[in-house]
Length: 110
Image (cartoon, rainbow, N blue to C red; front, side, top):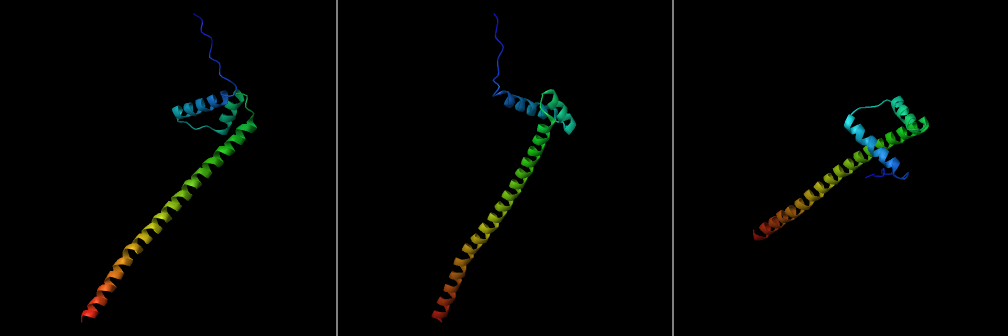
């Protein structure tokens, strides 16, 4: 029996290559120089200027992601401090009022 070869649409091909390159990079656990990426891009018929642009965009995205995480940590820390302060104030206020009431009642009894 003759099985036809599976065809991948031009629309899906870039996604397949991207996924395959990520899987391969994870498997290899290596780093690549810019010249190695350009050489690989040349083999895949990707002009060097697109490799340069992609590197710049990926680096910018990673920097932005790190900054967002740091900002989120700052917000979470400040929220914790504010919540703790308001909790302490809410706890302290009724105690203070109760002590004042006891002092007033003690004064009235004398």
